[in-house]
Amino acid sequence: MMRPRLVEGARLQYDDVRGEHLLLIPEGAVRLNETAAQVLELCDGRSVDEIAATLSERYKGTDVTDDVRELLDAMGERGLVIDAAA
Image 1 (cartoon, rainbow, N blue to C red):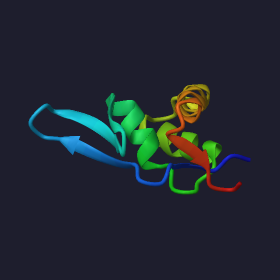
Image 2: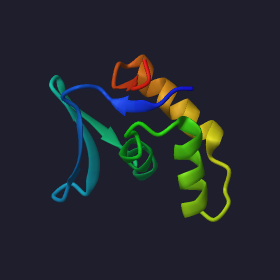
Image 3: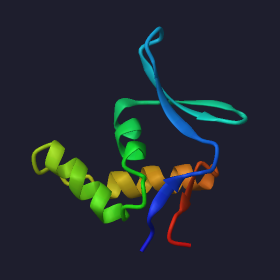
Image 4: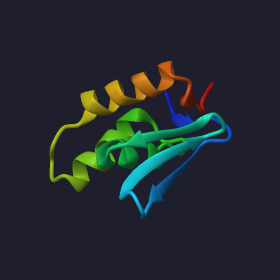
């Protein structure tokens, strides 16, 4: 089971001036929407199902599992998220 985490050197930051979430990486920055930022904040070794469950609880029972998997797959393809279990 995948336990996503941010790649080495990446960190989340909120830009107060622009009012947006950013994923800072050595090569630059990736602009994130609120939902993506919340998902990535939870990438601390929890499983994808645990991340989805936490977000579903925050949003009162909305099933976000497919959305979480899709986002993490896309971030993984870009080399921004890796599997902490590997």
